[in-house]
Amino acid sequence: MNRYIRSRLFAPLLILALLMLWEAVGRLAHLPPYIVPVPSQIGRALWEDRVSLWENSLTTLGEMGIGLAFSLIVGWSTAVAMVQWRGLAGALYPLSVVSQMIPTLAIAPVLVLWFGYGIWPKAIVTVLLTFFPLVVTTYDGLRSTDPELIDLYRSFGASNARIFWSVRWPYALPHFFSGLKMAVTWAVVGAAVAEWVGAQAGLGYYIQQRSHQFATAGVFAAVVVLALWGLLFFGFITWIERRAVWWAYARPVEWEPEQPQA
Amino acid sequence: MTPALALRQVSFAYVNASGERWLVLEGLDVSVMPQTFVALVGPSGSGKSTLLRLMAGLLRPQSGEVLRFGQQLHSPGSVAYMPQRDLLLPWKTVVENAAAGLQARHVPRKQAEQRVRELLPAFGLEGFGEATPDQLSGGMRQRAAFLRTAVLEAEPLLLDEPFGALDALTRADLQRWLLHMWEQMRRTVVLVTHDVDEALLLADQIFVISERPIRHTQTFSVDFPRPRTYEVTLTPDFLAYKRAILVSLQEGRA
Image 1: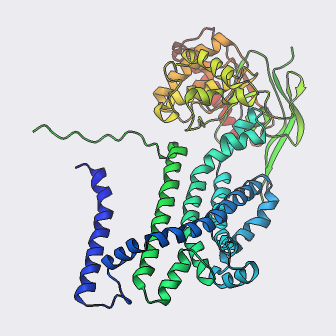
Image 2 (image 1 turned 60 degrees about the vertical axis):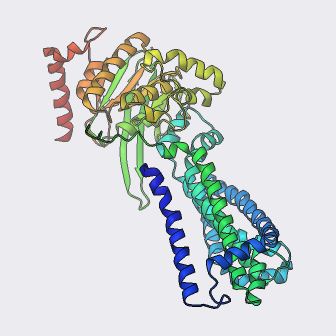
Image 3 (image 1 turned 180 degrees about the vertical axis):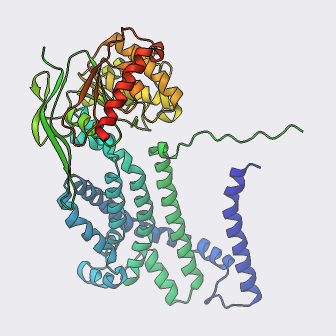
């Protein structure tokens, strides 16, 4: 077995071992399932309630999608504008930092008051959580371009737009993807948390319902679903990143000493 | 004859945020004649690169003027400039990288890449057109960067220590190669270097910079016959020139 496969197997094996430990302790200690459900009970809850978990997922993902799309479009444009006009950066950068400082849970009820129980308060919470990482990483990435490279393109007589698309943006891509990976995981959690405050559907709403019914296994089932969605999106972004910025990962061929012949 | 490039009473200074002023050039006059190979020799930090960037139009003088064939140089884009590092984009192939300058000058992509491909053999890059920079050796990367600038066919050609980052053997190889290339194309070249041997091997004229701020340069005409070979570096005349230039560099420091 080569080293690569071995290193890939380590994490799943560790998780499996922890689940088995959890199961064993729960059963031996006779913990009541409404306090600490064991993995097998959570698994059953997942399976029995799969239709409801799927439908509630769609609601949460919709809220998250709207919020994330807004953050992407507006955040990207903001970062680009800040790089092109330095004065703007002084005004907008602190503002995007402030957006991250807002205690989201505390203002979620106010958002519900303003925008009702529908999709919008959740989308706004998602925006508040994801705007900052996207703006900051994109802006820092765009600014990190080698000034000599920009001079070289200026010496070609290249326009600002060409310099942006040929040099600045490609070099900012690794930073941008770091921001996007953060944003996408925050977005899943953000939308669900916003649903606690007031919703008629969604995984956060589902968690709240199950919690009121002391159906703790159901709460955990929804948490598992949330984590899986987060992992899925994170993996998807990483997959795109590997293809878009392959050059940042390109490593020279590694040479190892040959094993002596037996 | 109109110089290919001329500085007339050029002064240039940098200032920093706390208001300190660093005067680099003061009332400098320099003329580079067409089809000559000029080397600018001076120690590190003497302002050679600043001078070259003024010639490229990347910096504007505070007073005086920079003339390209008698016309005032207002913006970059009319001369060919090659910075010290190769600055090849890692996601582009050699051909795509080398065509970038032409494309910025509004040559259509296919045409630009075609012209680059025609020049690959002369630049020792035959068969490497579709390679990415990480697959090339240091010397090849530098030749690819040189190709990107040379294919512009702009005059003059400004080279900022193009071999500075290379090991001694690769540098000697590239010097020989550049000597051969230049003797065939005969373009106006300004080469910045701190290597006196390199300057003597390649140049027709050497401008020695030894003072700060730079007020004038001391000019040496190097009249070794062309075509030159590396053998010239082993002649007594070469050593005599080298001694004179080193003395001139020392005088400025004293």
